[in-house]
Image 1 (cartoon, one colour):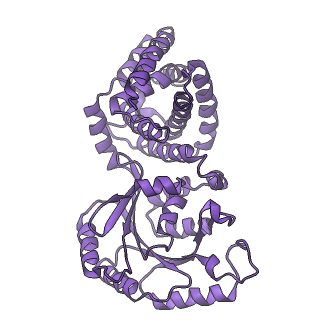
Image 2: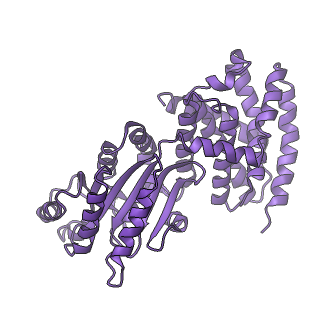
Image 3: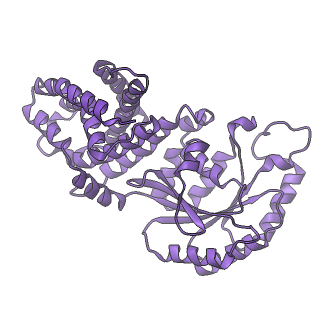
Length: 414
């Protein structure tokens, strides 16, 4: 399916409408600035995003564990996306590892590296360790953490322990979290659902203590978790998520820990049971955090073009969720179509006193709220396209205004 023509046609039509709105604003300079912001080229977007990546509080998590120990479930828990999207998102990294980057390669907050086939009889353990060492030898400047996953009823852990020992000896500076998983597999027979956390069952406590002894000296913190699928019918789906979040954050620098907490705040956590319906909004959380982070950085490039580049990336990701594959130019056109009139009105009302040069004084909370509102508008836009309807500018502007107001409250402490 070729999506270029209908999208470009709608963008051109909508640009003429929102352009007229901007022209009618009392601040001519503002309208001209908006046109300039949205004309960022593909090369400019790439350059801006490259600079922005260096400022993000990115956490690189190396998942060390056998298959079926809940590694992909940890990715789902921290990102909020569905199992299908996580499965499709992992890409080969080395011969024995694969990588998943969230929310996008352009602007990563979380980078997961998964060991593939660990524990298989034909697995070349030394080759795997060599690949991990080579990967870790690259100085990225990002926070790193090992997440060691072990099933609660698995005590055949010699190969896993050997790898953990070598990693610890070579990289003692990288903290390690021992995550004991799949707790429901050793629940008493009469227990059909998760109990209050933490679980107070003798078998689980014995297994936990034994695994802590087995890996003694190889981890910094440990936690009990049971992250399942919705069809498994356990409630909550991510049992022990808050304990996992807090324990992981304790091992990270302040900025990265704050990002983890913002990704998994209480409001978001309450919605995690509806993974398939709320995927888009989970991406909006991530991109809003990125926007706030970059808007708070007092650097020459921390102006509106940075937000525009960020939102081009976000709209491209949201488009994929709705079956629309977009080039950066197309995504930028949609940003212009959706946000032009809205942004002009909001800035004209709230930030006109900062002209000229107000781009450098945009508050982090404002940037986060604006990004969230744009994402909500993009979801309506793509949803209409998916349903075979022509997007309604007035409806989307209304959705964005409401989303902006609520997001300002949500992100006021960012």
